[in-house]
Length: 278
Image 1 (cartoon, rainbow, N blue to C red):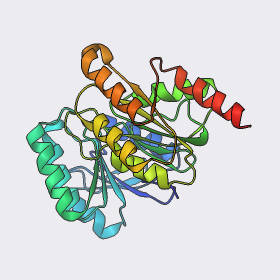
Image 2: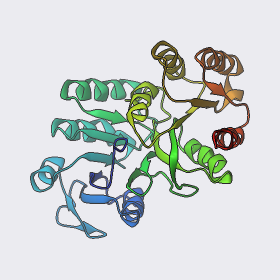
Image 3: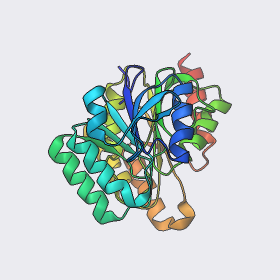
């Protein structure tokens, strides 16, 4: 069982003919991800790396089974593009574009809730399950297959966590970048549940931030449910708001989460625990 995506996941790329869309469609295909279609208004009949392009999401879903839509559209097009995908009942929406107005993100979340659609982002780097698939701009550098699940917020912070693990030759089971905007579709709790159920994940690493209340919510969830897998947390950008960072770290510790002050401790702690178990 994989987290959110696997090698059979069929991907639609909205904004496929943008520079970013082309670049990352190429990288997803290189990773053997199943990119089946793209959408850019006015570009019907074109191809990007052999992937057919349609004017509308409705045209793409008539011809292809779609499991996830990944969005590389301009900021002012995110709301309409998201609603278009949601109305076609695509079950998972990944919004790479960031800095979306809060009012628009709320509209997206409300529309998705009505249709039972899961939204990752805005401002997400993407999702990767090693040796299975990847979606978005997330890098597969410093990644090998292993047993550590990573949930992070702001883009590129997941890569910094991976570097800490890679240094200790530790692999990952899945990485989910939630997105760095103030309001996002999916929080830590939903992914914590998936990783707890995932037989390939033995340890969870959380990369939090000082903005928002998602970390506090996660800490309460871990404490109240007696979360069954060890969790390690690191708060990024603590210098932006030291008091809030300290409060979040305190709540994590009270919930039984191992909080690290230095990101390089993550790999060291997991490596030492593995040696002790061995």
